[in-house]
Structure formats: C-alpha cells, structure tokens
Length: 348
Image (cartoon, rainbow, N blue to C red; front, side):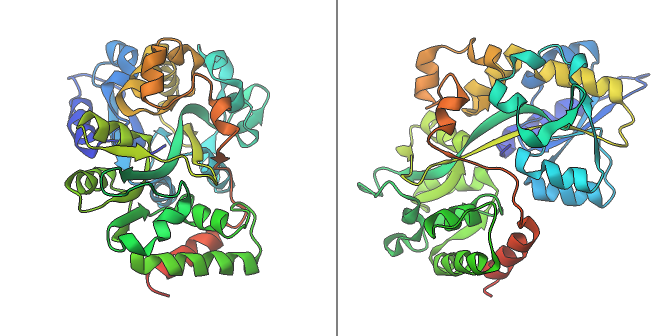
C-alpha cells in the first residue's frame, strides 16, 4: 500500500486515540499514513468505540524494521512483495478465511497470490488494496514527453524531478530500463541497475516517500514530474493542477497490499472484527473514491459509478490492469538490492 494524505491521516488518527472509560481491549493497527481513516472501518468503530490505536509508517521496509526491533501491533499493513520476509522472520500467523465474511468478494487474482497461501483455508495476508506507480507530470511544464520511464532520466528537467525512496519502486524501474528482471538479478545485472541509478542521481531533486510534499512541489511548479502513486494524481486533479499520470511503454508498476496478523497479537478476535469491517463493500468504495486506489473487493467496485472509475483511470477488474503493467512481487535479492540502493543514494 502507499501513503495518502499525511494531513488527513494525522487528523483522522486523533479519532482513534480517545478510549472510553472502562474499555478493556484496544486493537493496535500499524499502517500507511492516510489508511487509518475511520471511513474504512465504520462498523468496527460502531461495535467497539475508540478501540483502535493506529500508528503509521513511511513505507513497509520501515514497518518491517520496527516490528522486528520489538514494536508489537496486532495488525500491520505491508505489501505483497514483503510477505515472504515477514514469514521468514516468524513475525506473522495465518489468518483463517472461514472467519472472514467477505473473503470470496475479493478478486480471485488477489485471493490466489502464491505467497499468501498458508494452507487449510488460511492465508498470510488479507488483500485489501492495490494501485499503480508511475510518473505524474505537469502537462503545462512538460510538453509532449515520451511515454517512458526514461523521462525520469531526462537532463532537460534536472533538479525538478523526484522519485520514490523504496527498493520496490525506483530500482525496479531502473531494472526495466536496462532489460533486467527486477525480481531475480544476478550480481552482474545488479551492477547494471546500480549504474543506471547512478546516472539518475544527480538529476533528481530528491528521493522521498512523503507524497504530501511531492504534491505541494508539483502544485507550485518546483517539481515538474515525480514518481508517485494513484492518490497523488487524484489529489492534484481535485486542486485543478494540470497533471497526467503516465502509462509508460515499459509498463506501470502495480502493487497489492493487505493486512497481516502478528504472531504475538494480544487481540486476535478484535483483529478479525477489524478485518471484516475493512472488507465491507462500503469501506472499499471509500478507498476508491477518496484516493483513487483499487479495492481488492469486487463488491466495492460494484458500488462505484463507471464514470467515476474512468475519471480515476481504474478498470472495474484489476486483471485488466495486470495485462499491461509490471506486478510487484517478491524479490529474490531484496537485501542486496536495498544495500546497493542505499549506497547509490549516498553517492557511492
């Protein structure tokens, strides 16, 4: 999943921090900024007023590091490509789909993701959202660009571009442009990707996961383009900023994220209530309409008018998107790639 509006997230999180007197249990939920909105779990809050304590992270590498270091939420919200890593460190427990009221409403393409299957009707992650990563650019400041990821290497716009500070985003794009498989690299191929990233580094204004700042910089013209997620395109269009969310010829990136149950969760029953609330169609509808992301639930899409989906550049079936995009799956060399990316960013 990807950060939405940090300001909205900060404001909404206050609603979770007031616990009524006498409340015995409180669910701890660790998620992306903006995903703690009460709109996404209204029935849970109606049944358990004030019983959620939400904390947010910048990206799911940050989330993994904090949980491994000893932070103990009940539920967390990483993306699919990181699930194997959470399992390897024995941080999560299987979720019983028989306890999920709307499990079968989730699109089959997400229910059948290989790395979430825990056997015997159980899963390691409950898919909840999906979306795209691409180049968001100002159409009045970038005229008739090539519809390619190469635009983020264009010296014409040096100092006015930003990209995402995450291993499963910027290095994946560099791999695509060098003809390397992003998810299974040899050492020699990783060196090629590193060279491509070094070529880009001096052209960038910066690397960031702070989409609120990116959106402000695009709105002011300080940036003319940036690698972003759907929500930034949606936010800037609402402000009447002239932007386009590119469909690169090499393919947008598509990601899927969802909820995992921590192995040492103290509130398992509350966690199931929360997941069930999030899987209600109205919750997914709110996600789609507020942020422009796709819900994992077909029932949620059925509630959104087709003209609204067209406005948001969302199909009514994610399999349509996956035919023309690059799905972000597990990386076999994720640790090595992360170290390489850190070195490049530091000027090495």
